[in-house]
Length: 176
Image (cartoon, rainbow, N blue to C red; front, side, top):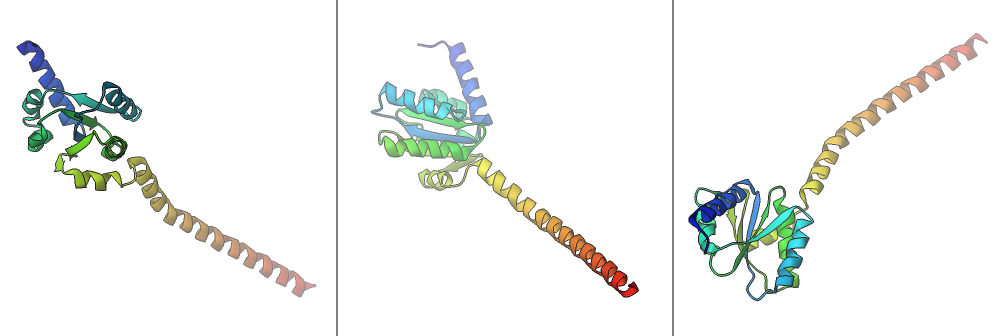
């Protein structure tokens, strides 16, 4: 049994995690082996994601005054909480991908950027491109008009240079 001070420290740590995470997914892992959970953790760790197995009573206390407060109803049974501080799309892709391979991992819901989400919302989120792909697409969209403008200006200058050259040749031919 843990002392009140240790529990208080754990609750503060969990609150910090809940507040700093842009993506949180609640899963039930009943029936999963230790090696399966370890495999999932290592897959998540590759993308700077975490998976915590915590007591529901501590999670409920830590959820107070955080975005997780609205999702307390999923904190029943063996719950593992996956979190991302950077990209909720990658979190959803990894968790849902693993749950498709291992049916013992059941998605219960989540909190994405402060909004409580159900399993359907998380599935829709997992189909989005990652943050890096979206940023690259946006950069390409911004760059495209600038590239077209540069080509137009270059073409105008080139045509003007050809016109000057033709005019020069015409004047030289007339003076001969």
